[in-house]
Amino acid sequence: MEFWVLFGTFGFLLLIGMPVAFCLGISSFATVVYLGLPPMIVFQRLNSGVSVFALMAIPFFIFAGELMVRGDIARRLVALAGAAVGHMRGGLGQVNIAASVMFGGISGSAAADASAIGGLMIPQMKERGYGVDYAVNVTVVSSIIALLIPPSHNMIIYSISAGGRISIADLFTAGIIPGLLLALSLMSAAWWVAKRRGYPTEAFPGWGAVGFLFANAIPGLMLIGIIFFGVRSGVFTASESSCIAAVYALLVTVLAYRTMTLDNFVASTMAAVRTTAMVLLVIGCAASFGWLMALLKVPAEMVALLRGVSDNPIVILLLINVILLFLGTFMDMSPLIVITTPIFLPVAAAYGVDPVHFGVILILNLGIGLCTPPVGSVLFVGCAVGRITVWEAVKTIWPFYGAAFAALLLVTYIPALSLWLPSLFR
Image 1: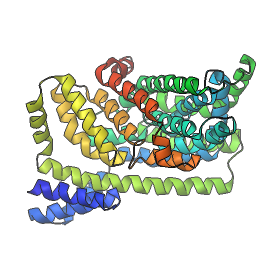
Image 2: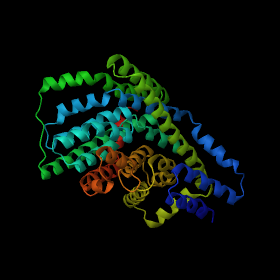
Image 3: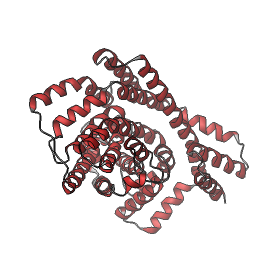
């Protein structure tokens, strides 16, 4: 009965439109009261859920990303991507994806990527004869590349949800090849759709122009190297690297590019505070929810249930992916990471799946959920920027969903895509 109180209350509150953090907190409170435990436990677990030192990295990475968004970094990366790949079929679509790869390595946020890159690329694509649905679809699905390429704060949330036993440096490293694989899959889909619709290519400006734009973008691109190699080499921790990223982003936008105004700095700070508050509230409430699931032995029951379905790891991983894809259609990413990691990580481990590999599967899977209705936050951002309805975008987004699903299956069943690069640093 306790199980139904916990999940029934959560499901009901979610259906009536209550914010996810409150759904998690209230359902946890109701279950604790039903069990006859002191209600203060919910608040103690919430406090312990956010009182984790590694979480310090999240607000600073978010702040660094906001500074980069408002400091003209995105425009320089788009210009570099345009010079490098704009001559391919569906040139501006390819530029959009390539820019997401570079910007994702700076922001670590899919929503920030969709807003910044979409704000620059969607109007240009519309002006040059591209369908607005195509522009929005490319922007939305390519933005989830940012979730895989470091610095992804969702990787940090996964590590903490797994008990803090998984190396953040390994997770950062493991996401690089899958992120690039996703980019290549999406570029193939963009090429195919562009060819069918007869979209134009852009003129290649020459290697001299590419070199000039690359040199112009180096101060921003260096942030990727500072974060990755600093954490990977052990010079500083993920939390320390986030502080360095924020300071570096401020110095680049103020001193190198001279694009950061006082108004933009204040706006960046306020946006980072709002985003951090939302993320940490969700993490804290999800920690209470997760503690109750452990108390009710939900993970153990899930292991037993899936073992009863099949002993084949291929089937089990497929079932986990299907369940996660379904959950991702109506819940946001951060709470799902905190809730589902304690449930499905033991199942995956029981079938010999490496925790780092499973983390990449989880992040990519839930990232796709950000692009699917009815609660696809990144899909909403892209549609708002492109000024079209979600229905108009979803009608033609299927080739890009197919590319993302293909990348997910490859990442799921070829562990070396995630584990080879981390193994080189051990």
